[in-house]
Length: 168
Image (cartoon, rainbow, N blue to C red; front, side):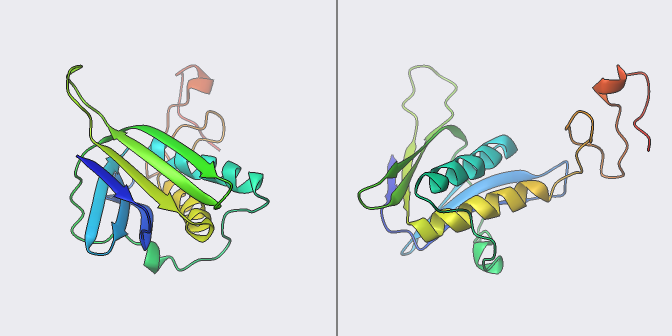
């Protein structure tokens, strides 16, 4: 099955769960059709960064202020499938961004699901900023190696060659 959202009124990313145990999602809604897809944290982070780069190409930048409640995931949060490949492009003639995602499939002969979500510039601004904020709400990162630490800050850093806990 293929999904095409040419004029979505809701495009967002979000998560369920607590830091360290979060599950990430991409959601798009057009009319009554709501599509929820499961993503990895790195995919959400990459999506936000790439959108920011594309916005810079059209002399724009991610939003600095937006309605965060409007960007919440809509219920029910039930993913149709797990996102594998992500492609993002910009149609400069209409200044719309095309987000294309393909399902992860285990069998080589299986046909993956596919979705294309078109975003206008305003949606792209909000999505880029929101993706960055969502990823940033996780566990704190080690200042030496950049890896996530435990919620309580405990961390054996590879920069210490595994010989101890990071202390301040």
